[in-house]
Image 1 (cartoon, rainbow, N blue to C red):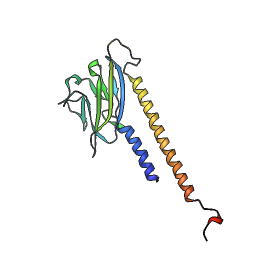
Image 2 (cartoon, one colour):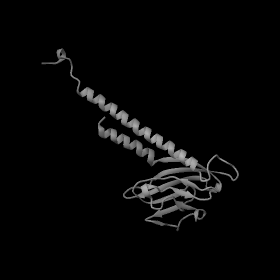
Image 3 (cartoon, rainbow, N blue to C red):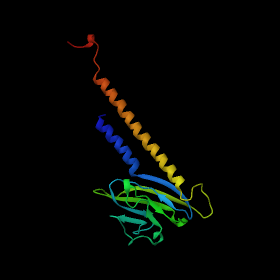
Image 4 (cartoon, one colour):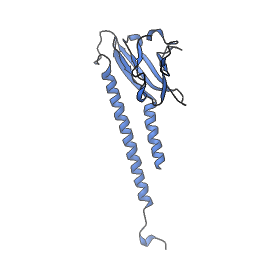
Length: 187
């Protein structure tokens, strides 16, 4: 296994982990919730939810919101966590959630020269009014826990890939430097 192959496998593992990310988030009715999504080199983002047809939750490109096809139930209730999209943060803030907001959300970004496949899929569950799910007012406990677990998995994958490649390289080097005893060498 060459170093370029090791690098490629490590990159693919990290890319697959980041690119097709799926999360489950639970919020209580009436709370604000943040649906996380990150992608570098982003010039725009489209958040959609299953069942809305051609309408969307939020569409933001080149510093402007496009409200033309926004589903009416999300008007004046959604925003980006960071409108400048620093560090690729295109997370969605959904305000005053109701049980009607429950569903599958997709985050699609518009980086230069790439397709716009979903990079984050969020399954949002909303507890009915009066039911407590053990989370804070804005659901941040679940978000922090999910991000922490994701970070640990990503770190473990990177370290594991590095160690496997390093072990393989050492085996290759020891095989390359092996010389048979003098009595076995052909003269």
